Image (cartoon, rainbow over all chains, first blue to last red; front, side, top):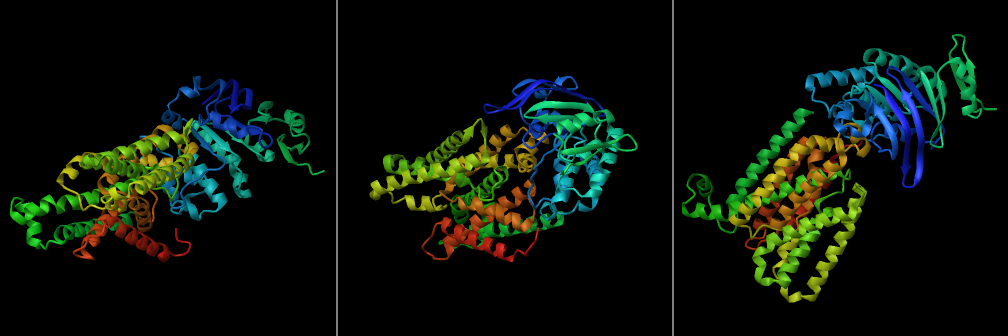
Length: 252
Length: 328
């Protein structure tokens, strides 16, 4: 699914949170949104998900305005992993994932297959019978990632997917995203704080500061200087032997 | 998991049926099992006729009221995502109390409209609280706070009416504690459509309630129009509780405790099994409390509400203490 954002603004009360956003997200692309705390990244993601209503401008999903979609139809097209999801602790993981199929009329058997696949893709198969309240913080996040996948989205929005996840899972994230794209041609947009992981997952990088887009680059060796400048030198950007960019914190 | 739900629900049905039969048989006026049987086989026969006119409506109304309050409480606790939510916070008790008292004190000649007045008061109060809580959107926390504040206001007005008119409130006690001793066939026939609507519509909302329990943003992400469904669920909860309160007086405690008892017995949070067992639990404890009120201090009769609070609280404490550490 392609997403086109034109002159989009979002106000909380009278405070502008997003101003004059212009961006394009193509089929099969993975865009990482980076930026400091409070810069408007999560708000942009929620606006793209149709959870928050933007104040001005336009946001098109496959050339149809997002606000014109009924919520139920939207739920069959896009899924979002929120930054702080919540669920009743007594619910089992499988019961929770069934709720991801709320908007679908695809039948119990098909739904369960989708759920099982989402659990397998995220390495959560063994958690299916567990209660939410017994999960660790990282397991909890993985289960909600599985929940987003169980909506079979064409547009997958992830808010700091790496938060709380162990190194092994992060290491496999680029491969997981590639696999999902090959299988379903989905568009991925993810807010990330780990720039190195972002550089290994994403095809495009979008930098936000003060609610405005300050950086929009393809993920290639040419972007090194712009990335360094965007992070005000907080990150050390280097080019690996394969031409890929790497990033690490610049402590000095 | 599902076995446990089936087993517990089946046991609850059996217990409720047994209590139902005892409620028909037992009371100040001694009857035999044969008389009870006659209600269904030969209803025109003398003792059966009396049972049918008096004890049957009372028994059915106790069950329906208990079930309706329990369903109301279950909906509220799920939709408002708060374990302490009960029909009282929608102001149904306070509003019903005010309206009932006002009728008894200022229009004593119209006291036969008590049920209609309390129903109207309950619905009006729920509407008022929703209005006070509304600010661009219906936030659960605002609703609870507005409910508590307006509830306090309602009890102040009720208190003032009682204090200023101490001589006119003889019939108020039973209403305030909650009970079924005045219930007749006509109460049953007027309230039955409302009870049926509330109890039959609630399961239709079960799947949505599960999604609503994840919070507004997640529910929207999963494809549920949150605002509309919250209002629908709350209106249904208000209807169920208002109907119960108009028949039984202020029995709100059943609405708080029955969903918790059901939740502990089933060890689940899924709305559908919870609604069913909680309705059965509400019906059962209310009926048992009414029966105890009739039997324990014969020939004196104590209001059902007294025993309901006592039984409900004790049974729930028992479940709470029995719970193993770390059990989920």
